[in-house]
Length: 314
Image 1: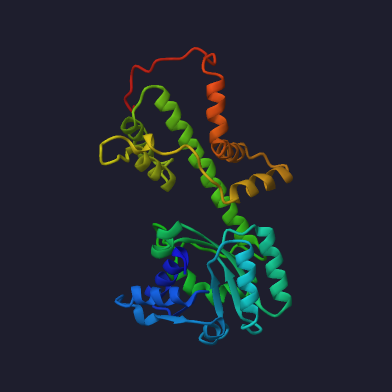
Image 2 (image 1 turned 135 degrees about the horizontal axis):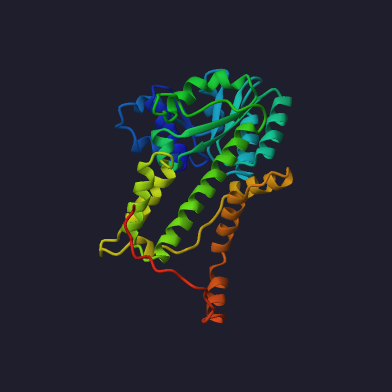
């Protein structure tokens, strides 16, 4: 019952489904139920202190969603579930797992009579609560069992369609989610470079945001990634200065972008925007080295530069 797990449970319960929740520390389960006891849908939330009691509460075939950190924590949770589930029950892993690991999990669980769905979630904490995009893949027969729940909880496109579709066997869903994340890497890198170029020409943050707004108005570049870039440009502290002046130019990575670049290289598919986005992220992680290099070359020769005289968005 971390933030993602708690928010997804609330989302599904609010859509009218009965939701059972379990956390390895029962105090957190009790706290979660207490915190949300005044919600209109509180009767749809049910907490359990043991994995056995949790499994016993589920309607057959049981559908157990896992929302824990990808890797060892996921494997440990699956092992615990295997002890209390029966043939035909379904394990749904929502972590950002490598699709090859999901292939192995699907094969292993299917050989033991269980069914598996690897289903990444896009939208973060807010998306989990209000409606994310889902990327399911795994045992084909699972999809129809969970489809009503997932489609109800998913974000909706402008035409009303739920932002989810079944992607195929094994780790197919996690593979599509991996490249979904990778696409965001590349797009955000493009906006970061556009911001830097405009800043070098003398534009301030609000002027850059105006340029981005004009590009958005053209329609083709309209996207959530551009929206948050505009918001980041305009963000200010209480004192009035731009928040970007205080943001440390270092960013981490959960691995999906790197895996995507590696897969592209292995199969011989050029993905330059993605690869450069991954490399740029890795460069930010070397903050101390970049500072040292800057001090070592204080008078690094610069090439000719141009002066921007017309700063209008048009």
